[in-house]
Image (cartoon, rainbow, N blue to C red):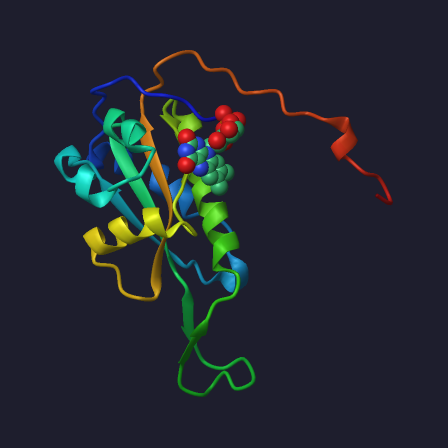
Length: 174
Ligand SMILES: Cc1cc2nc3c(=O)[nH]c(=O)nc-3n(C[C@H](O)[C@H](O)[C@H](O)COP(=O)(O)O)c2cc1C
């Protein structure tokens, strides 16, 4: 459930760690268990105009207590499959996007469970959103900013939408 935030809500780096939100996030499954995520937590609002320049979600970032940027290592480094004893090689990871969706959604579920609120905002594959934050964080070329998630205290009593649609469920065949 996407929610808005109380302005000026403060969630410190310590709080995020204490609430185990990020630990819950990184419990996500990942293809071949490569865990491609790197997570950057931003709380200094004076930097947001630079870090998120031009991002139309800016108001949500400014209202939140913290902004969590989920980044992906798009490569995987390990011995070749056919020769596990050989030295590690680095190759593209074709399914990093799936892993990043899982870690982002895990985080949202943990946020909700703790009575906080968050919104998944898209970053990848939109270069106008990716480029400012990648530049601000000085990300290496193989690290892609995937999603940007502001977290805060819920501003209202938002209820989950009822998305159940039986026509989307197919038994046996389409
Ligand atoms: C991949 C993805 C990208 C999204 N990007 C944005 C975004 O940039 N800004 C925003 O306000 N919400 C964004 N959302 C939130 C959706 O708009 C929201 O989940 C949807 O409207 C359903 O509402 P609910 O989450 O309250 O059930 C995104 C959600 C997903 C899964």
